[in-house]
Length: 284
Image 1 (cartoon, rainbow, N blue to C red):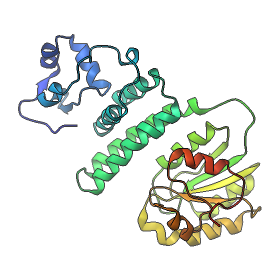
Image 2: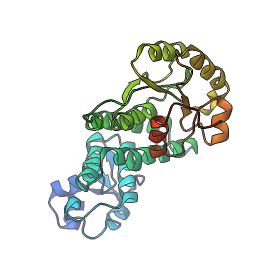
Image 3: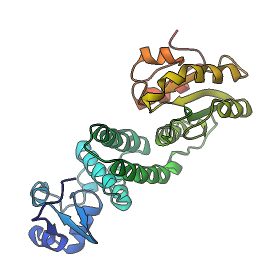
Image 4: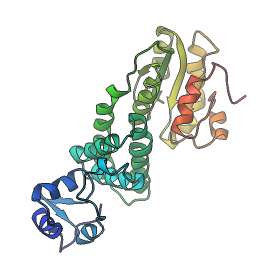
């Protein structure tokens, strides 16, 4: 989203320049096609962003084929940073209307947008408030998408997920849980900051345990992970059940091995395949 400028335009001025109704201009902002920022209760648009609006904007994007993925990511990122849930959901609806399934929305839109926002925060380009506002909206998007991952058919076993103790990130396991549910797994997501004892107590109580997944998003916690994994593994009834460690802090297979993971995957599709693989270590 472009920063506010002195000569920013009101939505009525935008509508006049585009030759469209005021509500059409408003819809462009709400669905993320046109970046905007709020000044008080009013949406304002940078003239440069208006000039960059591509020809054909007035047509329904669902009718002209799938929207450009990079552009959709940019729109979603803009709406997340603005704290605009309705606009962010509009980007999701546009993608699904063009044929994207819920898994594609998570892996090709939501996850990349969040990664870029996280990188900007780490570089000092965004404030903590910016990052938290975007994450809060993303949580609501993921929650709204969740029911669409439920599929009929026989369950493939149960996966227990959670973030390592001290790690307060909840979105990674929520998103992975949905992807696994879409592949007919039962999923128990323990959420952020989960003690090892809670992993164990849950894992021994579920039926047909397939795997345990431990997320590590905070690289500052890496030193605690090997002992954490060992504690979880020692508490399981079946030593053949794999314990997989992933998340943004686990950057390569070497690091996965060092922390005691039974597997490593570098993208979401590989992660799902990893949990669906036979219950043996793939890093031996």
